[in-house]
Length: 243
Image (cartoon, rainbow, N blue to C red; front, side, top):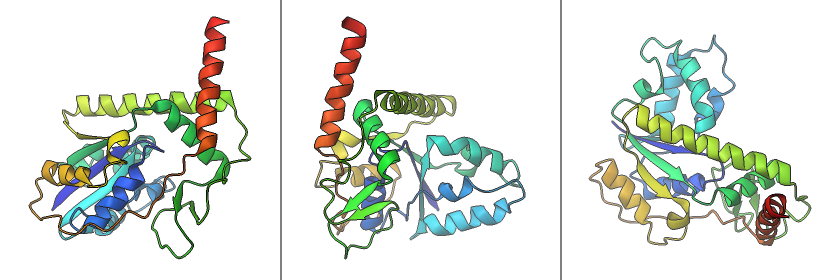
């Protein structure tokens, strides 16, 4: 069974990649399955959880899962109770790693801040759309964040978190001699030909052809509020260091 591990940070557009992979029908059944693991205790049956994980993420003998930087430490702690694996690199030995990154860390930080206030992470076009993602808004979402107040300190904290988590992933790959496929949000989110799926398939040496990829249902949440916050933050930084 081939394994594809999607490494990411919150608000990097990774759910778009997950949806696209699921829509391909040949790249496994990825999701953020380790969310559940964050609430497990030391007495949990980890062997059973590992079995559940593989069953959830597997489709047509391809396993795939999304893993956030903030989840790794807890997963490693739980794996200490496993009879087979000591850490996440052993759990996913011989896996194909994919690093999903958003180059504009400020926009990502603002997206994270707004999500923390609105509790909305994703959007689809209308009520009738079924989707696996959580914290989703259906229908008109143009003004969903109008009441979110601008907060320099909280955005700055999220910016620092993004940078720290990216440093973690980069060091993780170096220490374990992993050469991941890097997917940049600014590129794949605009590519309507789904080239990133072909890149993933090639990286994982998957021979099955991507014949008919279902259309992505997720819509972008970013709007004028995000743009105003970007300019406000840049202006605040400039004033703090110049005036």
